[in-house]
Image (cartoon, rainbow, N blue to C red; front, side, top):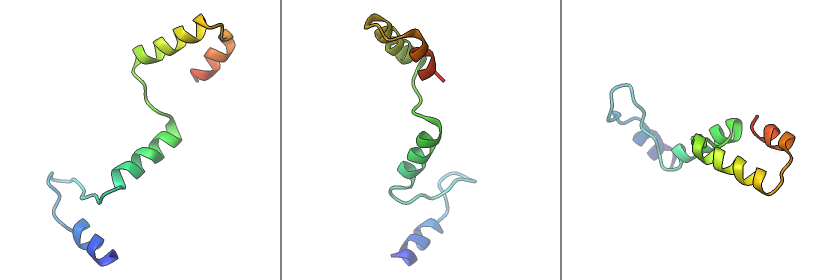
Length: 68
């Protein structure tokens, strides 16, 4: 299997300077990035979450802590 992976990864990338990835590699990279830095959210989504938290009485200090 490793020889096959090496063969595939040794192929010419579609974009100059690019990289050939095997199945699962993009997902592994995304998981590592999100574990390290969190899941990105659009500002309006985060704003809706904060507004919902305020409406149900979540303490403002806890909201600010979650924003860090």
